[in-house]
Image (cartoon, rainbow, N blue to C red; front, side):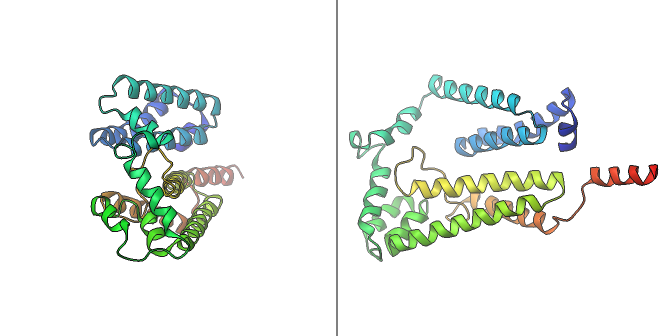
Length: 251
């Protein structure tokens, strides 16, 4: 599939790629997982540009999809999504409503100090409702800003390690898988760190590889897939074998 798109665009190859992308998007839409739906769409558009090298078409497609998504959000905004997203810019106007979670995170992080508050803190009552949805905030509350520094260093090291894998993968399809997994996990990790400030509009993006829920199983499967691809990084792609066979036949 990637070889077809790289060699030349055709109606058949574009339709096949669109079908492979639309099917997971429909499933995510049915379960109303808008965050992962948006992330999946962004990664799919970036992969299309990377495989085809048609960045101008990719920019137009991404811009059109973004405008359509914003219009859909504004037209069918039955649950006041736009108001809940924009509350981050004026948290003081609704501190006990849409801005309650953001204000709680900000207060907890401010009062943590360098060594934390330990157990039996206001975080316990906060987590009575949110449990492990914010493991980074819980870590800061219990162990302080020093633990946050270690967490940031660990996340940066993990992202750097994943990105260092990419140039070493020879197979094209394996590289596509590695890029998609790396971009998805890296975005979630960085956004989860930003969510610890309480100044982000969407707080439903869970910290990857931690917490609870079905998304943890999916993220561990993605990480295992990335390690499996890297383990076979020296494997020559099918197109490479075909080209080598043609060269040997001509010789």
